[in-house]
Length: 283
Image (cartoon, rainbow, N blue to C red; front, side, top):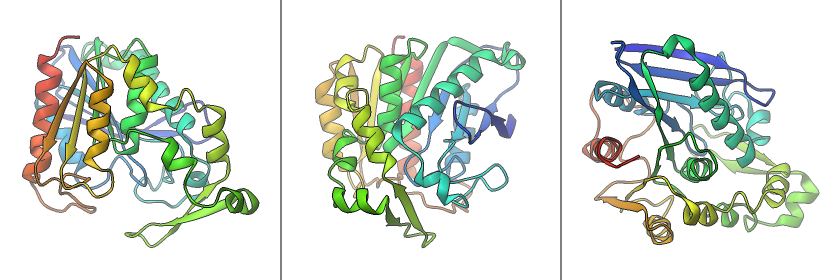
């Protein structure tokens, strides 16, 4: 297996995007899978590296990356040394970053013999479940999309989050990261960007218009994003498939750091559902 870690991509914004690639180098065209991490996440979180290897072993060209403003840096891609960047992140930046990664894959001649550009699929965890669905609806290069413990509504997480007047007055509000104990800033630009782009950022709109095959995977023990959100996503799209993983939490019973050699059965099940869907559903 060939693993290329921490490739620096320059996207549309000041901060770079850091990407990892996992694949078996055999000069056979492979379906491409692009994985997007969620809120307060990063590409090396928990068991994502082990997950990437499973996809590569199954014959996929697997790419995972850090959003440019996720709070990591080129020198420290794990955790959140750059809280200023984190506070300046927003949904449209993440959509821009994902587009830049797709562009990069399409432009990389080094991978030409290893990739099938007719088969590009997106997987988004948590908040990124919404990001990949919106991008799939608007980008004809995407063949299939998977929401992994994904959210169904950005609006209720933005417009109704706390005291808007106080947020506007202060210019920033903070959310505690329970693991790192950092106070994570959210600058008011996050709300302004959402309001300015609300139609585009309405996940329900994108899901209803979605023409690509759509898999929704959720754990029934998810306390961060309710399984009811998955059911709503499924109800909005006749072209969708809903799979509930029993006893799985928001991160499919993994944690960070993940020091075990194997994966929990809940994440194994979720990965297998992804692989079966990607291999068997029509383009």
